[in-house]
Image 1: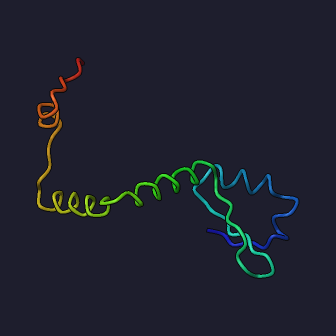
Image 2: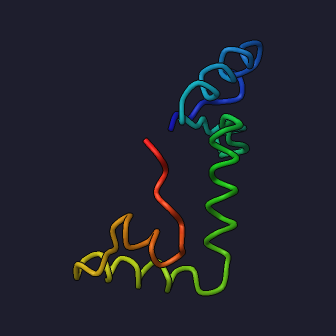
Amino acid sequence: MRILPISKIKGKLNEFVDAVSSTQDQITITKNGAPAAVLVGADEWESLQETLYWLAQPGIRESIAEADADIASGRTYGEDEIRAEFGVPRRPH
């Protein structure tokens, strides 16, 4: 993440928008030496919003911790087991 004063951004906004939209980079823009805004690409913003949405769901952190524990202890399922459990046939090759 880069930190730039607003004076560096003025007149070059298009250049900085191109930079953040083609990467996952973020630019913190300062005004009078203090952080004032953050410039991120649209895809990165959408990803951050989706992450925040899921983390705000009740019980999600516990579910993730439980899944991590299952994986660590070897309690996992293969594709065939999952297809059998839900009655989903294999796709033809």
